[in-house]
Image 1 (cartoon, one colour):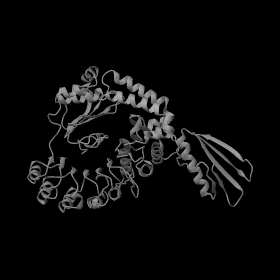
Image 2 (cartoon, rainbow, N blue to C red):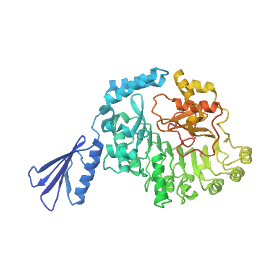
Image 3 (cartoon, rainbow, N blue to C red):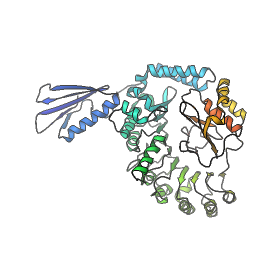
Image 4 (spheres, one colour):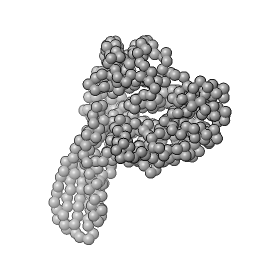
Length: 516
């Protein structure tokens, strides 16, 4: 049990964590002292409180004289802890069958997988087992493949759930605790992708630091999601506190896991944070997608380390969303910054217009690109023609036109009953905010609460926040059926809850289908 002593007196203080219980002993001299126990909602909550209490004692002048088992709130994985091989093999077999299953067999296999995870949660997930309401896991071959950390159940108040499971823990520290426990799991030794969700805080600094310290070398994808709770918090700061520079915060110096080759940052960043991110070091990073909007102080100067190829020397694919300084960026690109020497794919979003396109075409700066994507800009036929005449391969067409057929919808449907259920929902009167744009469909479908449905075209990647185990669900199929019947009106701009194009969560699943 870690022991602290006050050098100015003979007082001592000891603390030990036993699962979700903290045991403290304190007194004077060599006696046993007084023993106090306190139970917490989870082992992670107990660990955090152990660290806080220990730091308080050190601030009071106590000195650590014995640290047999840590006890300072730091995670210490059990040496040699590993998942039973037979259990992992059984889980892998069920997951393989589930991946290949169609029709009525899928729900049974899904239930079997959930049963295995429930019965063996302590072995597979350690202290994370009682906290799965805040972590969504995808498994492959019996190991965790993709973790969405901080993702609370649909229609559950995230702050309330965190307070229940991790009482008194600050929201940004709660996200860090979840990341630390995830990285310590034997089940996560082949972790490939992590998506960080806001738990109601705008800060991702502590979670990113924990990921950089503990992530396995298999980690390739890292994403920070733009959630409704994050947008609400940022909006509150801007409207009520007058903080126009509010946005997602990554810290004073972003440290990325060295193995990451793909990074996606969806939310607008706080003032100064765009420059911090572009100045981070990530020598293996090949694909980057980020938002340049948000704080009014953001400028093209923030992108200087990125464009100079000093921060991400291996970068070949870049997507810049919501660029407010498009004219200034085009001027810099026309000057042929070092990044263009090895960049192969570039996607631009925002107010880029024909003048920008013509300037880029005449400069010849983008001639080495394999693909330039401008379908989410204001570039019209004149700009497209200028770029094409300059020999630039474009992705500029409206991909949502004429690409959906009833045969495609039937092929996607998990079974005939799902298609029949979808037809009962494919009525415009049961939908709100129906819309389509270049490459996307979206709508809110009636339910216990409106279900958010969006589909990326032409790949037909479907997203819906309903609890159905079938994927795609009847709501996604219904939206496709409405599109087939030309009952989805064109919208100028997708609502905030619709993911940005190219920002799908499994954006490296198909290496032949570039993420942007």
